[in-house]
Image (tube, rainbow, N blue to C red; front, side, top):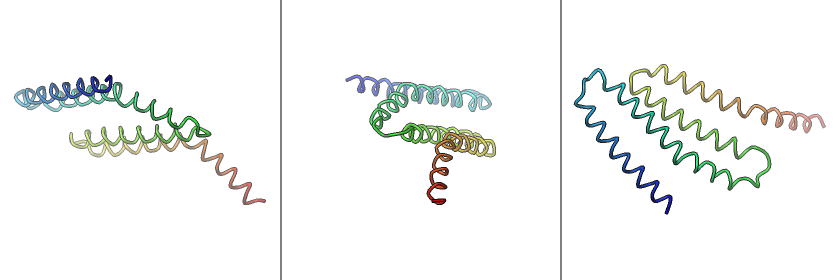
Length: 132
């Protein structure tokens, strides 16, 4: 029942945001990108806090029996990648495609750096197998 209420509140807020965007379309043309970006990031943070973080915690609990931090790293990497993709598309649509590509590349490098300790452990294990 709690999930249903969260879904209904989110749908209601989507309607409110749609109405705000319609009102913004009548506003000054120079203010539209700023207001649109503010609404986008506000709604993205709201969805992240109310839906994605609880879903991620529940999803992580499914993989607790797995050894090592691989499930946490994999799920965290997926969330970071999709948030980066969403924000990069938003920035690219605003006309800043080069900045969007650089930001998306930076997130990809950050994801790879999260995996470096496990990769070094894997390389150590493989090198021991090759030497023997």
